Amino acid sequence: MTKKTGRILIVDDEPRDVATIERAGTALSLEVATLDHTKAFERLVTDWRPDIVVLDIGIPDRDGYALLSVLGSLKFKGDVIMISGVSQQDLDTAAQAGKMRGLHVIGTARKPVAYDAIRTVIAKAEAAE
Image 1: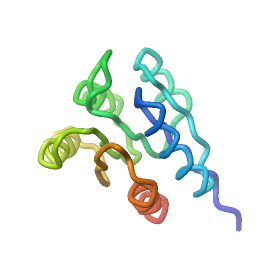
Image 2 (image 1 turned 135 degrees about the horizontal axis):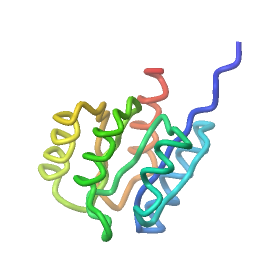
Image 3 (image 1 turned 135 degrees about the vertical axis):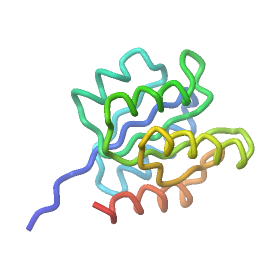
């Protein structure tokens, strides 16, 4: 029996963090797409249908809270991971906001993103499928 390859969408404007998350996703055999802006966000979520979305809550053109609202309105059924350089309390608040929108927020990670920490959170999503 062959497990389908999962998909992870990373929305972050910091190349170093994107590279770390991309490396973790690839190590877990996920197909990876990245956005350093949010213009194509709705299209990618709708057309590409990721299993996991990693959102930076501080992306410049539209913050993570707005993207959580988009995911909620799209009835996104995948997993969501929140990342940011803000305090853990602020990340927890963002995660709670996602849950209030009916999203399955499985974890958070502070920036700079540590490879082992993000890989563990992503693996948790993969194990739940």
